[in-house]
Amino acid sequence: MSLTVTIFNEKLDKKDDAFLSLENFTLKPKLLSQVVRAELSNIRVSRAHAKIRSEVSGGGKKPWKQKGTGRARHGSTRSPIWVGGGTTHGPRNVRNWHLKINKTARISSLKTILKDRLIDNSVFELTKGFDFPKTSHSVELLQNLETKTGNKIRQTILLYTTVEKLNLRGFVNAGISLLNASNIKIYKIVAHKNVILTSGARELLEERVLNS
Image 1 (cartoon, rainbow, N blue to C red):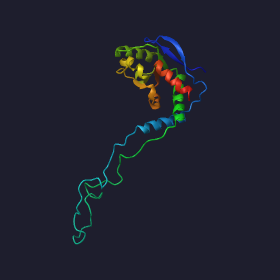
Image 2 (cartoon, one colour):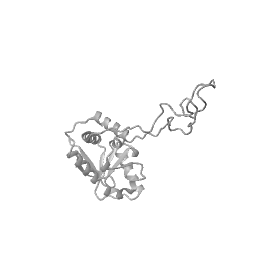
Image 3 (cartoon, helix red, strand yellow):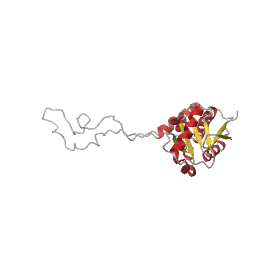
Image 4 (cartoon, helix red, strand yellow):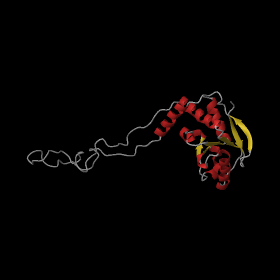
């Protein structure tokens, strides 16, 4: 089975097919799921934080003497059993959610999601020398793409390289996601049905696929 990326010009008139070497690769959905889970875990931030008794202000003085009052003994008002005291077993912001992702697992996951989108014929490439300075121009192109594929505009992600970023000004407010191909996030590609590549992004992806 030959998997190709359909190349379109600014008006989505088909120009050519670009080859992407994934024919002999076997899809690995379970591995893809694990890598997506790890990526989402690695961007997770622990914000909830409860103070323990050593972090609560005050309480330096013993509330009352140890004996003779008839009341229970206490050493500090910072005790968790006091109102305004520390919290026992509360959430802490020091938890590390990081999960390791092997390079081979990441590459295999990238191959899996790319081949899946290629099988669905939802990977497209823009011709070289493209320029979309206006949002209206970009939206028109995306609407044409929506008509051709049946996938909503918001389900589209555009992969680009740093040198091509200036030509994508019109896509910034067009309602799609933009992702630098040199800093691939697998979970972002998984969340979108249409994948649009610039010529530089396709070359970068092919280099990763072939050299792995």
